[in-house]
Amino acid sequence: MKWLIALVMGCTLSTLSGAQVYVYHDGRETVSRVLSMSLSASTDSSIPALNNLSRQLKDGDLVITVGRHSFDSVCDVSAKVSIIALFLGEEEFSVAKESCAKNSTAVLSGAPLGLRLEILQTFWEDRAPIAIVHSANLSLSGDMEQLAKRYGMSLYSKAIAEAGREQTLQALTEVLDRSNLVLSLYDSMLFDSQFSKDAIRLMFHRKKALVAHSLQLVRAGALFAVYSTSKEKLGLVATYINAFEESGNLLAPAYPTPLRVAFNPYLIRMYSLILPTDQYLITELGVCPESGCQEPSN
Image (cartoon, rainbow, N blue to C red; front, side):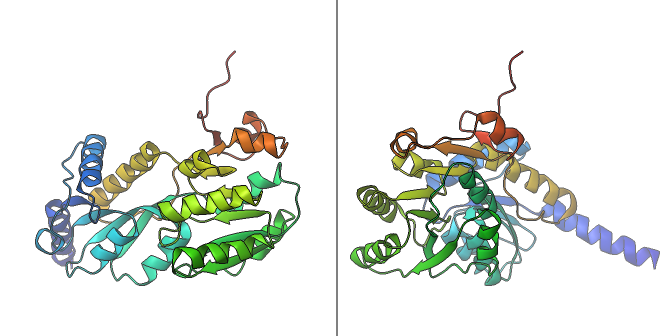
């Protein structure tokens, strides 16, 4: 029995030692190269950008995928690889993982819905229903409404079909007839650059607010967002890579911590909102202001 255990352990260690870690972005080699250099520096090992999925990958390899399309592409390869998904939201990764036979985890983008509602509760007094808009590719958990009630809010979701520009904007217009505030999820199938611009422009003209899923959308005109920086994401990815190389196992999906919150100063003034203090955000809600969690000066 001892020799059998030793043989299994030896085979496992041999597989791990021969495994290669790659970065893959479907169609964006520049992004792959930048991430490759950053992760190689963080882990003190060579993590090349993957160019040819079918030829380069072999059983036991680990692939860091960037975005939904890259994740789906690696799921389709024949090699038995493991995946760390990057730049996917919690809801989108949950759906994507179900249709992928590969062992996978994720360093998640955006923020948990409960945390976003908890921050919103501190300054948003309008009690009209809050809408969540998402693509038909996402399915939301059934306890969403119960979660909103915990913070004294009502919440409903609206799936917007992937159609032409006019149809998607018409669907959003119907949502705005019921809601003064919309929550966006990290949803690569709906919130591409064009829809994001159109949505923010429409909501501004209708005097409605958007609680966004990224810092970029706040700078484009959303009310606020809870997010993590690319540096924080890559730092957590490096931890996941090291854990995989040591044990062959993937850590559970997680958000980088602490998350950050950014507010749009123009909209805050326009709505005459009173925000929680930085200290309250840090100590009570566990998030940092956009400038970061600075130690208080003596």
